[in-house]
Amino acid sequence: MNQYTKQELSKFKEQKFAYLKVEESDHVLTMTLDRANKKNALHPQLVNEIAYTLNYAHHSSDIWIIVIGAEGNVFCAGADLKAMAGIIEENDSTVPAPEGEILIGELFNKVYKPTIAKVTGDVYAGGFFFLAGCNIVIAQNDVKFGLPEVKRGLYPFQVMAALLKVMPARKVVDWCIRGYNLPVSEAERFGLVSSVVAKEEIEAELHKIIEELKQNSPSAIRYGLESYDKIQPSAEEHKYLFDMLQKTISSNDGREGLKAFREKRKPVWTGL
Image (cartoon, rainbow, N blue to C red; front, side, top):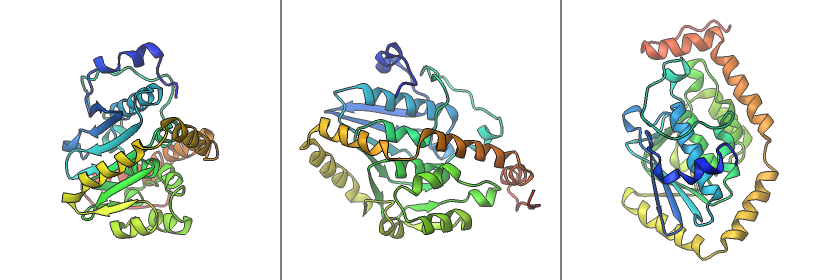
């Protein structure tokens, strides 16, 4: 991971984050999405803050494990549709801009540290980058999982590629083209979720897994995850999928879907 300079990463603890809470304790770095009022939608600066934090974790030998959680009752609603339409919310983050484009589907593959998603809220669309990208996913038994992009005139290109790493292809494609909510019990059965627990049990389950990981060699795990990354889809494939998303957004149906979403009405498709 080299989207930020060594000097920028050395000032990590001095930065002000706009949409992310970060805590480091006893070899564990915890990232908490902190944009609950916007359903933790992936604003460009939030993506930058996530990338900056994962770059820092990758290069820090004192960090062995990464936990990702979220404030609010929606873990992540996916891409910020207003930002996609060019309406960018201002913020006071001091996190430096990255060198080059950030492909969120690539981030988790490159950190080479065990990553755990603690899912206490609903997940939609691009929020599945976290679940598909993390090595372990603990989910509450009452959360909802949805892929509604096709109902907005879009398609979850990069999310599809990420999900194909952990779920059967036929189920992934069915989910993407029909756009329904997947029960969390099915998500566990198809491999997207590692364990499903009640709300009052999730902290204990997280603690148990962290303690198990700490019994193992951090360097052996790091090398193992690096080798796993080498047999995954390339950055060029992720770039192609990102470009396909931009093509879809600029289509007539894409523009109509986003407009209908903003106007809270049913879209009128033309197939163009």
